[in-house]
Figure 1 (cartoon, rainbow over the protein chains, first blue to last red):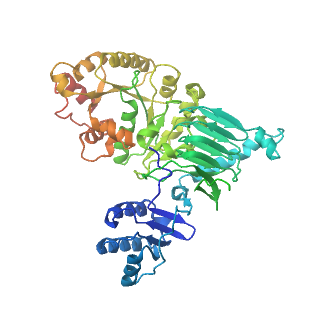
Figure 2 (spheres, rainbow over the protein chains, first blue to last red):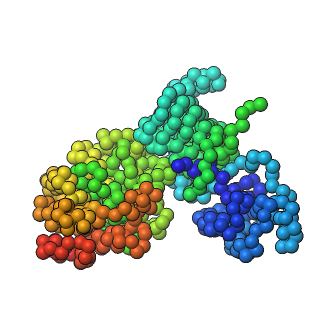
Length: 264
Length: 265
């Protein structure tokens, strides 16, 4: 069971926190929201929040509980989204109404919240990764670096078949795997990593510090993901995983996962 | 410099008798009583301790990289956040093999760990080859785990001999006892096991389905307050600390066992 691609109830976006509350009655979602806020209190503190409901008006008692939980974490409520009933509800409660839910598949990129909340954990490790990067570059002195994209492409290794726990591919260049990468397997590339299958092990793209590198998989559910000096892990305890092609890359100094959109 | 912590290897010879589960649970029990504990996974290439503790995702560096001087010891240690700065894991490498580390390196790494913790528990791989020698090289005491089966006891006996050659004080935990089978005469009793191995008995752990479930979820059963096994591991931890803790009623009451129990205090 993989968790990476699950739609979390609380999402971080550029503008603040989005609470997706349309899949179940609010009272049922409350424990999970509380657990989320509890898990990394400092990460959420002071953020702005938008509550998205469907068409159903939330239970008043549960709503009060939610407001209290948000206030406790000093999350500023920017407003609510939802159908016409929610607009009325917002007016009654004196909240800003921000319009209906965005139509179609959510285009909002999902920031890896865990990547931020675990940044402190990995502080030492990150420093070591950066040091190793410097050393690795030194070790490669004298080896002509790939300059054009053609040369870089020439250093791509293709692996056919499943990579199992304990197996590893380390490549100066990029790695393509036609098959699954199981937990306990490792892919380490100075360039990009493409897995035509499920990525459940560890992938490190841009292993010598290239933060422009990316990781792509048909089912992106790694144990841990690294790009350059950045490290991210899947958020804890999330479900509803639907395999879909996704791309991981670095934006604003952290790893983000975006649904793969084929070039038009 | 503060006093050095105790370095204990947890070993069995035979595979699948519960070394890793015992290491995780005993570590949790000690950490809950406020001791600083570092768990070392010496099973390079077939690591499991991280899974049992639910820490797999947080591994960046491992024992082999520490040994090779590719990262600082501190960077490879993973703090278990369920405990206040009390429980740490030094994971094994998954993509390397046992030969990647030498006995001297293990000795110096565990010595360094003992300088920062009260207990260093080393989870030994099955077998008596390189991996076993590595795991034992860093230890000053040993816990032998066995189940009440002739094959496990035979292998444990072999291991006890090996540990004896190295002069390590060795104690015994009998794992996966099923009292109802023992009563019916279908399973060797703890007495039988002790008679063959002649070791000081530190604990008796009954077979319990909870272990399978909690192990799969990465939450050692010793964390579940009020469960039978959590209490048993807490007791084993206290015995390890040198306390006199009587064996409970689900455990056998023969003279021999009482004697070992008393000596354990």
